[in-house]
Image 1 (cartoon, rainbow, N blue to C red):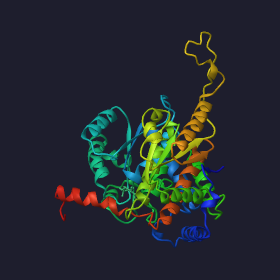
Image 2: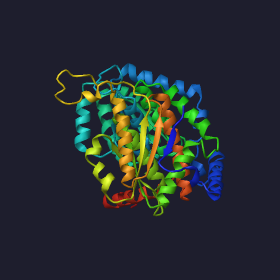
Image 3: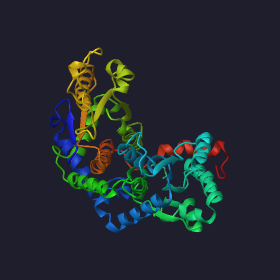
Image 4: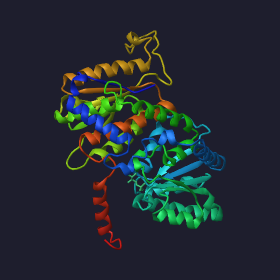
Length: 426
Ligand code: PA5
């Protein structure tokens, strides 16, 4: 099980002796946790350091939520929301109302109408809240929590304390003091793991387990990736390879990467990837802008721009080798739609052909191509994929001499909003 990385040009030729040396230094810096931002490299060995007791504790809490609730509202933004959302969507079974607990997100945006309608919807369901904020002070989820906490207290009275779970820093933040005061069950966001690298901590694991997915398999996949990517080999280390190709394309004048997929279940993996790479790399006037498209939908929309618009894009296909479910085109007696030439073809195979056709058209149109291939969409392979992306992101940022783990730019809008709204002290 691994992620294969294919590039439309010669990859080996990209790695000069100088680059090889730099990559090796980056690799050692990450593995020995000595590189810039080393205080935030806790995610590197996190999958292999997770204990069965910790996973069991998450599973017990998840089972309790499933036994007394129909809806889990997860309140969070950025890295405190996108990881679990990405995994839940990737493993989802659309249109099926099964026994899975429904997970609904809040606090990822500020909307009175969203919150009002959510609260109205919750009225006929049994509910648990999981509020997630590493800092414990982020305004958007804090606003959502203020309304939803009031709702829970009015509805459940004393019982509300056992229906609210807080995932936050171990030592600081307004959310921590509130959780202590109210006696909420608490999970810790480790101090050395930043939000967008936290999907394998309680931040991601609790909502994923509560939805009924196998977190042991998710971690097994991440652990496998951790093992594989510990080996520094520029030919076989997929994270190094992806980072090298991205940097090469960036230097050649392609500052925008489009992540393309044919599977709508991967839409939130794309969103998570955009946050991971955008927030990690986009600093000091540098960085590749991450964008995403869903095909075939966007072949009839942004596809025109990609084929013929301003030449600044490269495209990375995220492909899944095996379909989880499929249909085969059948022979129709009347052939009025003239599709009998497709009979016997699975829809997955149609997408494979469409990938080939699109990639070669876009390449001819001046859009360099990368293909990332994963085997299938299940917990194990998704765990592997997400870890791969985190490691590739660290290499990519370090290749640009950027600290991947801070986000100074995010503070600017916050300061302004506090000033505009006259927060004391601003
Ligand atoms: O990756 C990050 O660090 C950010 O995107 C954070 O996850 C996001 O800003 C939310 O922060 P917090 O969890 O402190 O509320």
